[in-house]
Length: 263
Image (cartoon, rainbow, N blue to C red; front, side, top):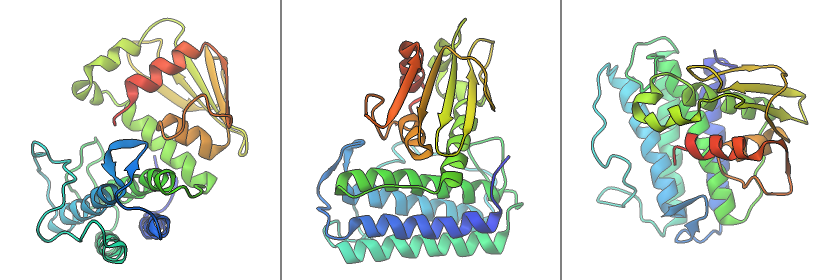
């Protein structure tokens, strides 16, 4: 289930890209990104731009099969890429990729069969995924550039729910079998967004992961603004930061965050 219309996601791809580009202005593109320490800021932008172009290609060609190549997440600049030290050129290249993606997604609509890495194998998956891919990496860029980061609470909630859906999907266990180590008695979490009165309950006590919106008694509760809850869950902000509060069994939260991290 998604929160927004296909058109809203297409618009957000463009809006989040524009905000990411704004964070680059005057920044040191060779600086290391603290939350993606293997990348420079320029490499982060290259990753996002390539992700946009990859999704656009899949939707445009109506690809229903795809094999992820080994080393496919490389962020080394090569022939045809923008210069890593040209802020304007890098930004223009990023914008062009987002615009092509949004145009292709709008032309296709949300229901065209296309390859994805999830159970939802429709074009609408990529509109939502690229919205949140760009949003989260905007947080990375903002941290590297030393500028502020805020998100519309409804969009942040949808980003969190996409993450919960992906990280608790049974197929993910094939990719990360160590996730089974999370399951155990008493392992429940409550996520509370204090500025929107929205809550999520994560249950790890059964034979598979489960989550839903709502309030239940949990072993540990993470409380903060919607943006702060999102960035902690995505590990873009430390739990020990002053902007969130942890109530209950901190070890359950730490284990969950560490084990469900995908980079």
